[in-house]
Amino acid sequence: MPPASKGQSVTEFATLDDLRVAGKTVLLRADLNVPLDQGRVSDVSRLERLLPTLKELSQNGAKIVILSHYGRPKNKPEAKLSLRPVAAALSEIVNQPVAFAEDCIGPIAREAIAKLKKGKILVLENTRFHAGEETNDPQFAKELAALGDIYVNDAFSCAHRAHASTEGLAHLLPSAAGRLMQAELQALQQALEKPERPVAALVGGSKISTKLDLLQNLFGKVDILVLGGGMANTFLAAKGTAIGKSICEPEMFETARTIMQRAEQRGCHILLPRDVVVASALKAGVSVQTVSTTAIPPDQMILDLGPASIKEIKENLMLCKTVVWNGPLGAFEVPPFDHATNEVAILVADLTKRGKILSVAGGGDTVAALTNAGVTHGMSYLSTAGGAFLEWLEGRELPGIVALRGAPSTMKKGKVIM
Image 1: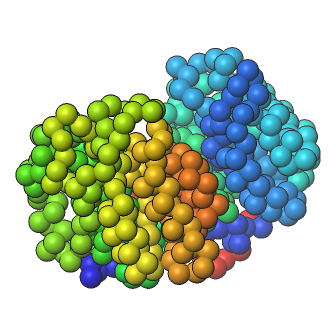
Image 2 (image 1 turned 60 degrees about the vertical axis):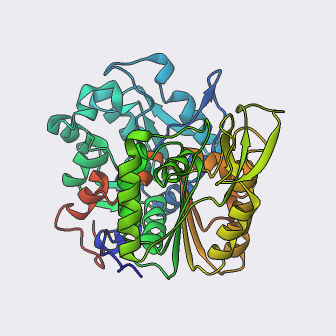
C-alpha cells in the first residue's frame, strides 16, 4: 500500500480553544458567497455552516466583525455585489440583528465597530471593493488589522487565495482557525494524510487535463482509484479501446498511460469501466443501451457506467475504510445517466452511516451530484470549497492555511492567548 504522507496538520495552528475573546473585537473571515435571487439569498446552507463559530464567539463575549468578498467586482463598489442582503439573511439565521457597514476599512468601519456591543455581529462591506484585497497589499491588510484584536479564519473555501483578508491578516494579528475551518482540515487530514486503510478515491469529471495534478497526487496516497465520467473515456482510449463518439482527450493518451503505469508501481489499483451505458446524444428520452467496453458502437457515446462496473466498484468500496470523492461518474444532470453516481453514492452513505468507512466528498459538481442522489447528509464530511478542496487533493499548500501556521509567535497550540 502507498505510504502515508505527512501533509498539512490541523494541530499545527490554534483554534477557538486557544482564544480568550471576552471583550475583544474578532475579525472573522467567512465566505459569504451565497446565491441571490431578486436581492434575497436563495440558499443559506453556507451561512448555516458558520453558526458554530458565531455562537461560540458570541457566547464568549466577543465583538464579531465579519470580513468577506462577494463575486468579482472591478476593485470598486458595485451595488449588485454588496453584502447588505447577505447580512440580512444572516440575521434570520442567528436570530438576532446583524449590523452592516458600507465599507470594510476607514472611518465607516471604525464607527460601526465602536457601536457594536459584546456578543453581537457586524458584516463589513465586500473586501474586493478595494484593489488591495486581491493584490494582498500590505497597507490594506494593515487597515483591516487596525479594526480588531484577533483574526479567525473560517473560510477554508477561500484558503487557496493569497489575499489580504485570507493571508495577510494572519501575519498581523493573533490568529486561529474557526470551527468550520477546523472541521474541514480534520476531515481532509483523516482522509488523505493519516487515513485508515484501504483508501479509495472516486474521481470523475470530463477531462484529465483539469485534474492531472489531482490524479498524480492521489495514486501515491490511495489503494484504489475509481475513474468515471469523461476522463475514464480517455483512459479507455489510451489502452486501445474504441469508444465511439464519446468525449475524450487524445492529447492526454500518453499521460493516461503514464498514470496507469506509475499507479501500478505504487500498488494503487485503478478501476476502469467494464461496461457502459451509451446513447447517440446527451438528452432526455434518448434511446440507451448497455454494452461492454469492448463493444461500443461507433455512432454512440458513453454517458454512464453499466451494472457490471457499478457492481465492481461497490465490491471494492465495501473492503475500504476511507473514501474520497471528487466528480460524478456519469452525465448525472440528465437522467438516466445519473444511475451509477446515485447507486454508488447511496452505498457510500450507507457504509458511512454504519460506521464502516470515513467518507469525504467535495467540489461543485460532486456536491450537485450527491444532492441529486439525496445523500448530502450521508457523508462524513461534504466540502463546499470547490477550488480549495481540489487544490488540497492535489497536494498543494494553501496560502490561507500556511499563514495560520506562520501567525504571530504568541499563537502556540496549547496556550490561551489574548
